[in-house]
Every structure is written in C-alpha cells, then in structure tokens.
Amino acid sequence: MSTPLPRPAGPDLEHRAYVAIKGLADATDTALSVLAVAVIGDTKDTTSNPWGDVTLTFPTLARVDGVVILNVYGTTGTTLQQLQVPIWCRVDGAPAGQAYLRAFSTLTNAVLAGHPVRYNAIGWGPPK
Image 1 (cartoon, rainbow, N blue to C red):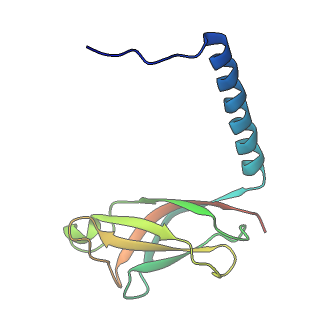
Image 2 (cartoon, helix red, strand yellow; image 1 turned 30 degrees about the horizontal axis):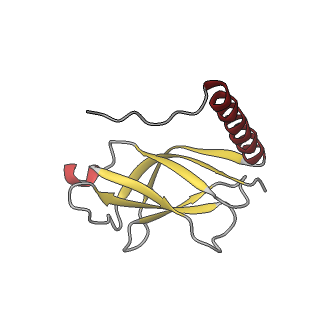
C-alpha cells in the first residue's frame, strides 16, 4: 500500500515553477551572452608527450572555459589504437585560448603517447 505525498496547491506551484524557470533562463542568457564559441574542424595531430596530450588552440578566446571534443574514426595505428577517447583539461595559467586534449584507449585505458589523433572540437570562453 502506498502513502500519498502531500501536494501544494496547483496554481501556487505553477507560479513558483514559472518564476524559477524564468529566473534560470534569464541567468543562463546573461551568462552565455558574454561567451564566444570557436570551432576546430576535422584536424589530424600527434600527441606530444608521454601523457598523450595535444594542445588545442582557439585564437579568438581569451580563456577556454569548456570544450566538447569528438573523436573522428580513421586515425592511423592499430585497430586498438583507433578506439580512443579524447578528453580535455583546462590548465590554470595556460596561454590565452589554449586547452589540452588527452587521447587514451577505450579498451586498455592506456594513454596514447606519440600517437596520431583526429578530432573536431568546439570551445567556449570569454572572447579576446
């Protein structure tokens, strides 16, 4: 047997939800209006250190606050090396508009040092 939960009055709940959603939408619009978005199209590169990193450069951004990266299948290497996941990390004090991509195998969780990668990236942050 279930116990019904108390429910607030319908109109009051609807009004409070409306106010909360509108406040969130306004705050989100304000925050996004000061950001710039930059794209790095289908790019081939090679990881540059033992940690499997590639430097991403977004020349129009003063700082990179976030990045979405998509691995593009078809890099060179063995089939196992082609199954990789690119992730990004922000490093405080990095040069303007730079972030780092790290490539690692989805099967072994090993980083792919000195390995070719192919990716697309969308970055955002304050404009220069």
